[in-house]
Length: 122
Image 1 (cartoon, rainbow, N blue to C red):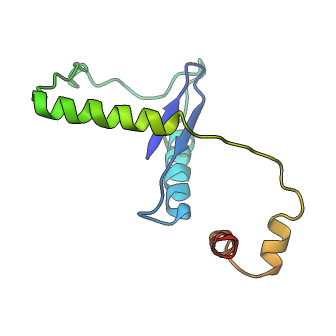
Image 2 (tube, rainbow, N blue to C red):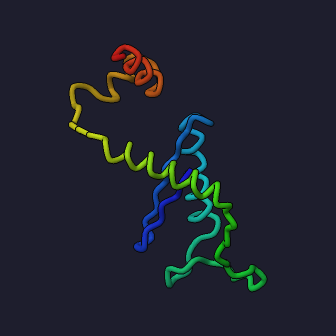
């Protein structure tokens, strides 16, 4: 689960959801956003409401002691991953033959529909 926060305060989320169905991640996101807006709220000047906690320690940079053998494995793995990533061709095109309306008419979940399509394509 990765949150991506930009300097302009926009935020997004990327989730690999094999551990849970996508709605679980969606509910988490909804909870976070609703808590921020409806429970915490914002002051007139746009800042978050509430008081700061002076007892929270300031962030510190983590120092890692990685043994040389592990560092070699990490570098080899990174090199292999870079070779694979640099050898990818991606072609994207809009698909507008049908959309969610047809999937709803089939009375199935979008995930099941796509899984079936992938199996048929294979």
